[in-house]
Amino acid sequence: MVYIKCTDVVAKVSDILDGEAGRLTRMRFYGHVMMCRNCRRYLAQFKRIKELAGKVTPDDLPPDFDQVMNFVIREIDKPDG
Amino acid sequence: MPVERVGQQETEKARLGALKSGSAVAWRELLACYGPRLLRYATRMVGARATAEEILQDSLVTVYRTIARFDGRCSLKSWLYRAVHNRAIDELRRRKRYVDVGDDPERDYFNAAGHWQHECPGWDGMAAKRLDDKRLLIQVRDQLDRLPHSHREILLMKEVDGLDPADICAALEITPGNFRLRLHRARAALRAAVVRE
Ligand SMILES: [Zn+2]
Image (cartoon, rainbow over all chains, first blue to last red; front, side):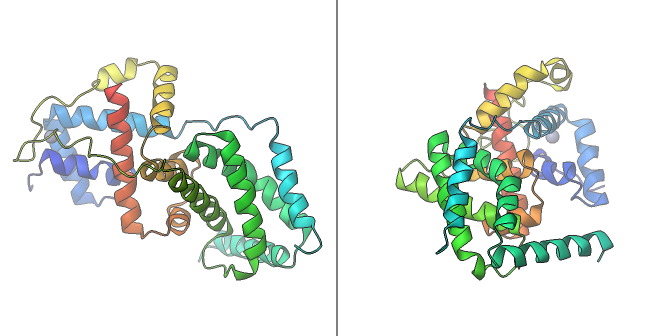
């Protein structure tokens, strides 16, 4: 198997996690990660933070949100547009 | 094309027709559906709720006035995001607050041979499991709000709002290849910012 460097691993993490990498790339990637403690650590951090970014809940809507929407609706309801 | 996708396209076509004909019901539905998430997007981009509200109002009114020009080559959702996004970026640039990609946070990680020159900074896999989810989530959210705007926009659309890559490409007017590259850099920047904390 062709050896890949740590920089290659770091560059490929997103493709791996998003299922965008081919089989050969995945094999090389995980082959390296098994042997390299630093890349293993990097992968664990990257994966965890990516998961948590998906759990960032949107802020609550402002109490005056209806006013914001009503402004737009008034604007679009004007006969002249 | 899958039946489901054809169905979605038909629904979108019908919706677009109603919007173009000025149907108040269709416009109200559209605003109810996308207004909240567009406001949240604008708020996270500009940081101030009041400014975000202005941006949302302006861009939605613009969308309404220019809907006739919308050709349906991208989704309505991506068109709305594009309008809000462009207006937010204009506002940030006008106030000289727009931050483009900063330095590469990983530039000192590797030696000339392409290997780690020091330990990978931050917690290891075992420690990560023990880290308190809530505390880490707060850190991720705080750091997300501080990232350069060019990183933030792509993470907000992809990870927070869960938009499809095709919609993000259309909203940001970028190619799929550029999207993959930018998404990865943005995630790497977020990782670096969180572990630096
Ligand atoms: Zn390595």
